[in-house]
Length: 411
Ligand SMILES: *Cc1c(COP(=O)(O)O)cnc(C)c1O
Image (tube, rainbow, N blue to C red; front, side):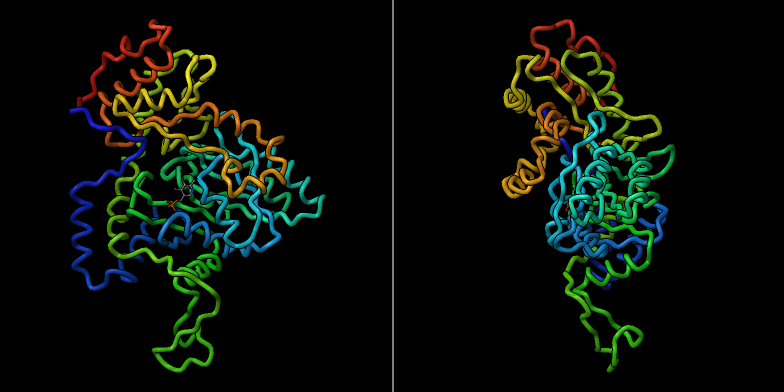
């Protein structure tokens, strides 16, 4: 039976199952020791001073916005192509997400455009506070350039590394390690590299950010005689600011601990599969495979093709339909933020139509094909054959089938 292939999928094994069962029998299902243990694991893996886990990557972004004290009237630069949450965290605190065009090859925020807009907005009297870079599809931003710009203009720098866990840049700097950014955000949604079902983390260089995030995660309360003014006894807590319940449970952390042990293996598997796709798809007419810049180790959260649909005489909808007929579910990551009704008016006021040509071009061309460690050689060949059949119809010499003789061990 041929299975349905989708762009992403969790990878759960017996160790994960046992870890969650053991956690169920633990003394505490939430606010227990597994939270500390998962946070310790994240600190060690990413080589970062502080880690605060929370209920989603979106929650982690919201905590970042609160820790950095963005306010109404502030402007935060975000890439025009990213998941909604990157921009929404600015809107949650009343700040304005400003949509910046992307590098045409890597689809990460374009540092030249960042600097141009910072100067322009500042000279128009706007309070530009921060930049959020997104390691799109798993390819790191140009963090060294962004850091220089942040230093030159006194900007805060946040890494949305939800796509890039286990990826590297500048040789061997880990994405999410806060080497260049003040804060980094991770997501443990099932399509990401490791999962806790829902979940996320805020990684930080500075203890004041981590302490703030931990307080906000739990209603903005403090406990203990050293923290509570006029402490009355062990029952006494004090809510010092408006916080949330953004906690991650011990059940989820047990899964996270078990998954984190496999992160390097997952990334290696994704990279091997991506290399195989490259071999199957490079050279097809009207199809471009993902770019990996020198010094970058792409984490391949997504495998995104760029397809010249007009030249191929094909619509993207027709491609989606043809793929679905063969049990292959494609996706698009993402439409420009400015296309969403909620942001359309804001984007127009920012002159989005003029200054986002690369984001628009990317959106016209992009298609994500299935990529996750559970795929086998036969699945990749099935997907690549579909791409070649559908996109290169009039050009049988470009067919993938001719190059698909190699069989993987699991086939
Ligand atoms: C997944 C993701 C998030 C956070 O998503 P959650 O589903 O809330 O964990 C944020 N930014 C990007 C770029 C993402 O892909």
